[in-house]
Image 1 (cartoon, rainbow, N blue to C red):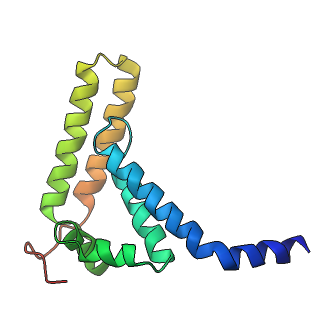
Image 2 (cartoon, rainbow, N blue to C red):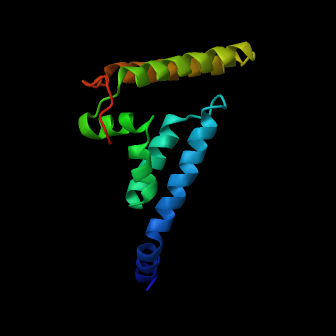
Length: 138
């Protein structure tokens, strides 16, 4: 009885759940662009994934976005990132760490964040760089 109720609720509210997840994650990602220690990229990726699961116009809008859509299409097509996106990510990691250092964040946390940011930087470096430097038309 309980499993069938849960299945019924999930089947009727799945799209709404994913839509809520998409918009909430996207909002957190945008907020993370301005607040240190709140990550941006994971929330944006989670938001995009939720939007695709909801089969929404929001996902279509993100893919067709004139500024950021090219990177999403590149990731979908080649599982690679444009060099500009990598450079921006590296710059933001560096700026965030410097701001935290300037704000006198305790050194154990700075050390942990330096290790985390370095790991993310290495991951970005190891990702393939997109073969096309110019975004294709949507």
